[in-house]
Image (cartoon, rainbow, N blue to C red; front, side, top):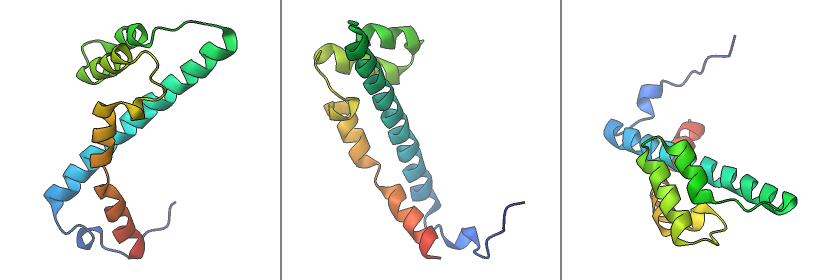
Length: 111
């Protein structure tokens, strides 16, 4: 059994709507980072094994109607030498917006 905290979580969240918005942004940022890491692994395998991988086409295989994956395809199609999704302007801007959660985590840690 995990130890229970003496801190009342309801006292940590000052603005519930802002907290939920921050969590949503950070979950999205985590998703971007996960895909960026996955594509870096594919790029490394491509170098190691001498493959030519079409990252836009790979994204279409996974997409299934996802607008998020459509944005990944667009990023790779517009820059064939894109080294990391986090360097694409669309994703760079979204990652930059996902900074609020750090404050909530530090508030919780301080208590």
